[in-house]
Amino acid sequence: MNNNYSGNIDYKINMPTIEDIRESLQRLTKGLTVTADELRAKSPIAIPEERSMHAPLFFRSLFDPDDLLHVVQKCYPKPSDTGAPHICPVVPGNTATAKSWADYCEIKGTPYQKGGAWVCFNPVTKVGTGKNGAYRDCDVTTFKFTLLECDELSMSEQMSLFAHLELPIAAITTSGGKSLHALVACQAKDVGHYKNLSKNLHHRLVQLGVDPTTSNPSRLTRLPGAVRTYLADGDGIQRLLYLNPTPEAKAIINY
Image (tube, rainbow, N blue to C red; front, top):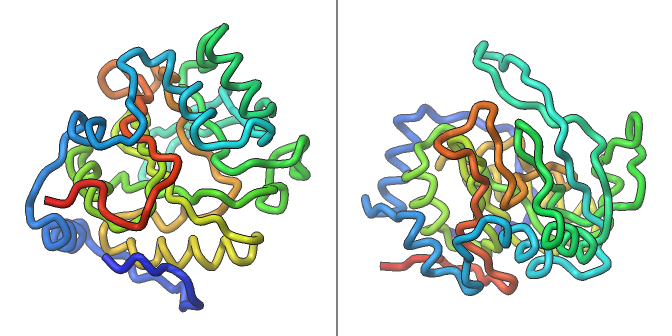
């Protein structure tokens, strides 16, 4: 995998079939599978078994103490274009510093409701400029990460994909449903630079099943340690599987 994802590109995307995606994944991974236990074993920061420790570890490891982070708990069910139900977060949620969130989660537990919980993975302003205070891309203050998500693949295939990509992956979290969320470090200098880097990366990875619509900086990711009961898979825990505060552009697992 080419880890250089800068440069200007044509963002018109031809969406591959699931057969094409699996063929590309097979070439990347050489058919080798990766388990959750293997991802945890490769994590530079040890992942505790107790889910209550996942959110504090996430906040303290990936963010500066004074970074303002937006956490959302409320949600509502909504049919997708295919008619299948999915969960829509209700924004805005609550905004506090990374240190405040870590302290809160350690003392009172990770906040969540029936749909789980989400967090904007880039620091934001104190108040959003969107409708009712919702956060927009222009409200992001530091462009640290972009989000990779690929719902078309099985959990096993997603683990193998993220483990083999030669990218600076900082965190991998289960959604509590049927997907993984991977945060890739980008350290963009401004919103224009971020969007170019992020869209370029998503464009390159769409052939491997990565959702091209998750490239904007104010997007939400699943908050580690939260639990969902609506449309949950198994126990619905949003588990942190991998955490690396100083990731490099190389594969997590290289057989």
